[in-house]
Image (cartoon, rainbow, N blue to C red):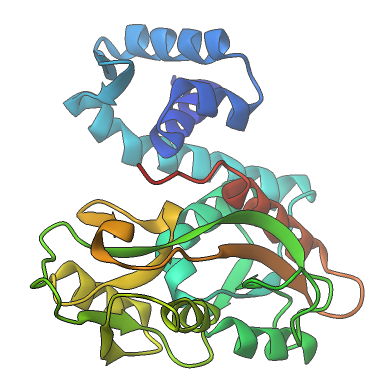
Length: 294
C-alpha cells in the first residue's frame, strides 16, 4: 500500500519545485521529506528524481506517478470530508483578474481542493476595479486584486485591502522581439481601467523612447499571444515574466516602472468558512517570494 503522507511529500516537491519549499508546505523537515521519497522509491522499485545541478528533476517514472498520487490523495481527502462530518461542503465565489488567473489560479485551486474537495468554487475574471464593485455588492465573497501605486486601502472600492505581495513592474517581450533603432516600440496593453496600463502611461510621459499602441484588450490571453509572437512588448509583475519572455529596460530606452501590490479584499460582514479557507490557500500561494529579474 502506498503511504499518503509520502505521496503528499512527493506532490509538494512536484508543485513547489524544490525539497526545501516542499518541506515548508507539508510542515516537515527537509530530511523527513527526503526520507519519504527514499521509502517511496524503495517500495516502487524505481527512482522518482535524479540530481540535476543543485536541484533534482523527475524521472519518467516520477512523471507517471503524479496523476496517480493526486487521485489517491484526493480520494482520501474526499472520504474524510464526506464521512468525518468535519469537512467543508458549501460554495464560494472568487474574483481574480485573468492575468493572475493564468499565473496563480491552478496552484490556488489545487492547494484548496486538496484540503476541501467537496467545496464548489465559482470564479469570475474581470479587472480589479470591476471585481471590487462585485465584492462590495456581495456578489463575490473575496477577490485577488491589484492596488497599484497607491497605499493599500486608498484606492476607491478597495476598502480592507490585505497586501499579499509587492514587486516591481517591468517591461516584457518575447526573447525574439526586436525593433529598429529609433522606431517606436509597439505595445500590447490592457483596457484603460487597468492599474498597470495607467502606470505604463505615466512612466512613458517622460520617456526618451517613443512607443505606439499596437493592441489593446481586456483579455490577458489575447495580449499574451501578441507578446509571445514577438509583435509587441507589455507590462507585467516581474514574477510573471515566464519562459520565452525577457525583460526590457534602459537599454531599449524604456523608463523604470513602479511597484505593484497584489492583495485580497473581502465582502462586507463575517466571511463564511469556505471563504476563509480559500483566502488561506491564496495567501499560501502568493506569499511565496516573487522571482526577481536578472
